[in-house]
Amino acid sequence: MGKARIVLDSATCDDPEFFDVTKHTDLPRETSSCYSSALFDRDSGFSMSAELRSNFLRTQIENDLAKGQVSELVTRFPPEPNGFLHIGHAKSIAVNFGLAEQFGGRCHLRFDDTNPEKESQEFIDSIQEDVRWLGFEWSGEVRHASDYFEQFYEWALYLIEKGMAYVCDLSPEEAREYRGTLTEPGKNSPYRDRSAEENRSLFCRMRAGEYADGERVLRAKIDMASPNINLRDPILYRIRHATHHQTGDQWPIYPTYDFAHGQGDAVEGVTHSICTLEFEDHRPLYDWFIKHLPVPHAPRQIEFARLNTSYTVTSKRKLKQLVDEGIVSGWDDPRMPTIAGLRRRGYPAEAIRHFCEEVGTSRSDSLVDVAMLESAVRDRLNKFAPRAMCVMSPVRVELTNLLVPLQLSVQNHPSDSSFGHRELTMNSALLIDRDDFREQANKHFKRLVLGKRVRLRGSVVIEAESCDKDENGNVTTIYARCVTQEAGLDPEDGIKPKGVIHWVCASTAIPAVVRRYDRLFCTPEPGRSENLLDVINPHSLTILDDVMVEPALRDANPEAVFQFEREGYFVADRFDHVSEKPVFNLVIGLRDTWSDKNV
Ligand code: ATP
Ligand code: MG
Image 1 (tube, rainbow, N blue to C red):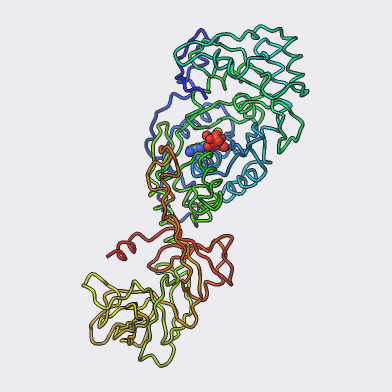
Image 2 (cartoon, rainbow, N blue to C red; image 1 turned 135 degrees about the vertical axis):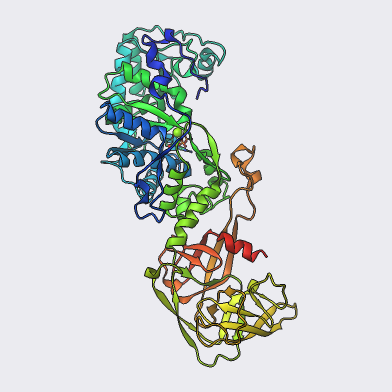
């Protein structure tokens, strides 16, 4: 992909204004003031006062609609089905579908499937599932660039007929040499002046499969001296004897992305073809095709900056490397920044959408702190995750004075009574977290200490009396007494507990597996490192398999998220969680609890 700056040269085309970037997007590089709308607020749990930021795309579309340049906004999300979608794609999805939703238009889902060797039905299926999971629905059927291959072929013949395309026999090495450099103009190919008749015949034979891969290409005849390398007679068709997931063995030639993309937009009546900044230098070529072909609609391309988050890679090639080398368990590993990974990790779709809105849409590249995404997840889950108790590293507590089991009714959410209550039984044998007990501690340790009091979440206040230890000095049982007899009461002697700890009942709790995830990379910009494997966080996954949880969690639905009191948010694994063996993934920790636990 050429990275030449566009230096506009009126000699390169007959309409100097045509290639004027500013004419099409004379737009600020930054987002600005606020635009009030409730688009992303639909029952999202985020403040209804949250306002949609104005951004240059919205402003542009508003203007185009106001001026009557377009009557209905039509956008598209155009993934190449060569990998799973990632958080960057979520931004593009939110932009394209979000704008269509906001302006009462339509958004298509179109697979840009011009590269069959790298593509597969598996990716097509996963992409559709991810778009829907994010909460969007495309207009009409799923579309494919390959649906229009016949039309693209006709248009290639049209360009040949008009003397604007030719079959070139230069080898790839020769073609590179002829292309020139950023500072040197290119040279015309010796095949550039073939007659339209010869070109048509050769191109038809390319289609008939008469030539080997790479033997010939079809190129547009534009300008080998253009300062924009993309205009130096770009390739329109390549020979590839490859079976295509949609068209089978019908085609031995495939259009390039540049030739297919804009024309796909034109066929579909897309009005605003929104893509990322790396395509800015391709826009003159996009416009050249639209201008010279008899297309039914004239879409226009507008670029915005890619979303990059810290501690994340979003290159599909690098994500594939992580999968292929077994660093993660698959594209949907909960540590992956793929939509499928984030979903399995327990990130709510609403939080991802909210984050995409929050980061804004601009024309300047930047790195967004991934903590912003994590914070959107926390905010959403704080409101919508019911509470439950899970003891990660259990140690036994015997309540010496509890003779009859207590029946407790515990709130499922501290501030939302609509979550209701659950019934818990508490008898004299409990399990608490090993880290929540010390024989001695200073006043900063607000948990259970010999001779000190603590409240059991949703239950009574207890005071530790003594403990047993094994030969290695590990505590095996803690003996404690109930200071109060009823849940929620304060001790009568006025000596109040300093803290609250969570617990489960030893006889009814069930074992579970907990997977604690951390960031996959230990540097903020892993994509910059020469070898990705050098910056993998070796502690990105810890599996705890002797965890004890409340019995009702056996019936948790896969993908249900809970706040395990004082531990964080956990999701029942989408695939591995079954009632016989509950499996929970850490979604995200509770920031306050972390600091409390690290005292
Ligand atoms: P590749 O590197 O394989 O070309 P890609 O990331 O460009 O992959 P596509 O499938 O071509 O993936 O992307 C579909 C759409 O998503 C494109 O319009 C692209 O511009 C957009 N997109 C991709 N990555 C990001 C990102 N990080 N931020 C915003 N949009 C993105
Ligand atoms: Mg791409």
